[in-house]
Length: 162
Image (cartoon, rainbow, N blue to C red; front, top):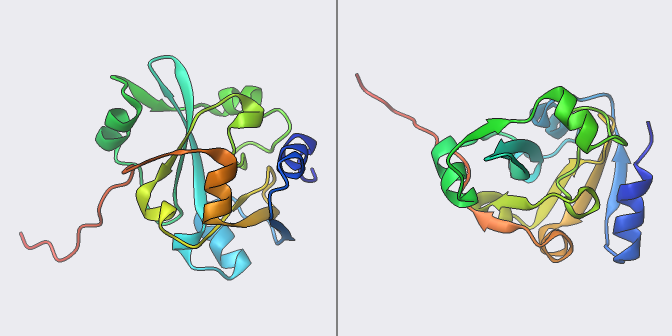
């Protein structure tokens, strides 16, 4: 499956500067970082969640995990869960399951960008397939997508002594 026409049309209609690369199949954001020879903090995971019966895209660094309490607070919802594969197929019919980009407008979804990732100069993410990535300046991405910037990830815990 090539780059989605819906995504390409959206980017081009907004004159968004981006580059597209192709790599070996990669199914996790960490694998994408490896395939693209990029640091994990530059690669975005696009996580679709359901909060109080509404869908959201959470965009977090590849090496981080969602802090569910922080995410519920940021979204202003009581209940929050991951979208199922079937829901992803319905929401992103022109994308491979699990390779949806963190661009919500073409799909009618709000986007929340983790503050850690928002501070990076570059952002890379799946382009709708497990073999293609879009690369953008983070500022250009933010101008295009208009995400809500919020703290969404768990802090790493190191040096715990029991």
